[in-house]
Length: 178
Image (cartoon, rainbow, N blue to C red; front, side, top):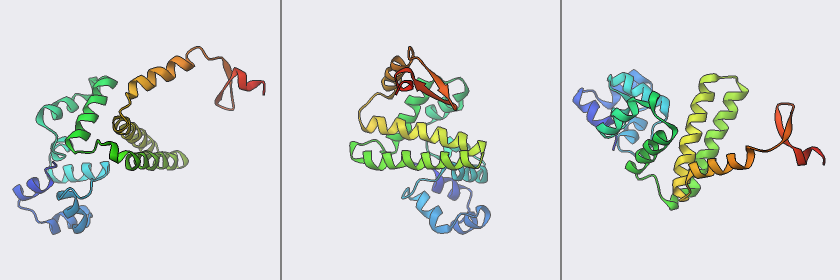
């Protein structure tokens, strides 16, 4: 459960004031507060800056998880993976019923990555790659598939693969002779 409404009320600010100061519509702020819609990463950051609170706190993450996430520089991939699953579970996002919707989120993020690459926008590229990983982690949980096992399996297949790079793309040895 996010803390958007709680923080706004503690600071004695109206939704109208937040909208005027941040450029986010009153309607959208209301939806965020009622958790009818999830803010994008940039919006979380904008609102956290506006309220002068950490993003993780504003998102309503448990204090232990907030402290854990604050140490992300030292977190392993596996620790980040588990933190993301916990975040999604706290929001009731993980469910086999959501598989199609979560897959659509993956493709949406792929589209944003393509846009970032086409515009040579490094910030958008990094943001999109992170978002793709998050959506894949959640999708893999919806499908009851261990994403790390998938990654290990893929590496086991490619680690001894031979071939050559053609125009920046690796081509398998067997495909070179077709």
